[in-house]
Image (cartoon, rainbow, N blue to C red; front, side, top):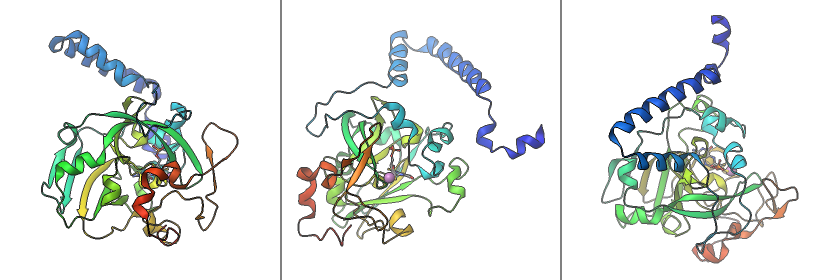
Length: 315
Ligand SMILES: Nc1nc2c(c(=O)[nH]1)N[C@H]1C(S)=C(S)[C@@H](COP(=O)(O)O)O[C@H]1N2
Ligand SMILES: [Mo]
């Protein structure tokens, strides 16, 4: 018995039923103690909101009215290499990922550098639904109703200095929890970056949820970036550090393969990846491929950020 257990990776050892029982026990214990201190109604409504994915109707000017990708697909077909490189491994391996407590370090050319508790950092901002397309550089795409707020609102409050020309984001480094980090598939921790005007653009979101509920771990809990006109890898997950800097940062994918992944990574059907075309994409849940749109369909909003730039050179 012991010998068998040693060969099974730690994340597979917990027996499902035991886990369920333990969860049930913890739930009941929490419910009981909550009953003593909290008004009943508050407790009940909060549970409901956490548990059920809500269908979202487009209402804002940036929302696409295209069919939204099934919640099941959005939460089981993921890229999150910290939890393995197979599409279905993040949903399996991130189950016990601890996202509370969570701290975020604000650093660099900014008037208010500080290590914040996530709750404190998020408190001033109202969460809104935003229905965006996400186009992965690998050729698939989704439509996801995010819950979040514009990154620009946070940046304004942090008061960057005039020297700050770029913003760099870093994911948690913790191989004891993120077992994908035990392999050298990428140089950890995962780092991404945006030019200041891209970061300030009203389309750029800090997402804390999707389908009206808080982010599942595999989608980047407790909070992640969403930059809808760029390839998916720019939308970095589980952020622990935001740094304001003068020079363009080195980013994880550009470091791994500089001729394949540039700093800008704007979705562009006219610029092929060296190993495959970017002209078409497959929307998850659909059979036929559809043409990929320049800037992922957000050209009207963002093309002016790049006037005069050669997008083949700055890919
Ligand atoms: N930290 C981190 N962030 C990441 C990734 C990753 O491997 N690690 N993958 C990126 C890629 S390639 C894509 S396509 C999107 C996928 O987001 P989703 O799984 O929520 O759809 O996350 C991006 N953010
Ligand atoms: Mo991606």
